[in-house]
Length: 251
Image (cartoon, rainbow, N blue to C red; front, side):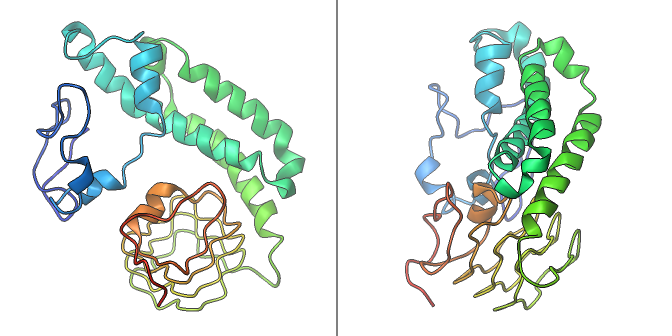
């Protein structure tokens, strides 16, 4: 995938070309020092298993370095697979929500359809109408998320798609809030109560989550946490871990 020299990447890289830090064994040569060397963008990237699926399933273990005839097609399939795998990740989470039981059957059927699609050949994947698939799945994810948010007390806030860049939300009661796609870059969420909030697609780059309560949030990803700031007092949902660069001490 391409990236441009910026605060997230130290150099420019064109699509379809290997990163200069990629070793012959396919590992990153500076993985332990990505942030220090100006590659913060790499630390928040998650292919959601799409890379493994493309290389091992779609192309049967072919190596793009030695199978030059398939390299271009493999690179084209990868972003399609990544989007499908992201949908699978959210569908799987929605199926764990007790409050979303009324839509579990539809969620399970959608999961099976998307999973089957990820196992098709390269041509079929490239012909996939990904926006249509995302729309179908998102409708179900929204319903599941709303059922989960309804458990929160009071009248949950609706900040869906809101521009909250740099907003002062310290110690805010955001239980059950919809923060779907919200711009929360550099927002102060320290000490905020975000239990049962829907955080799918929320931009949490440099957001301060110190002491925030993120338990029972829905659709929060590890990548979002890595992009944010937090500390030892930040409470996390099951299945997610505290990023190594977070402050070790509570404020």
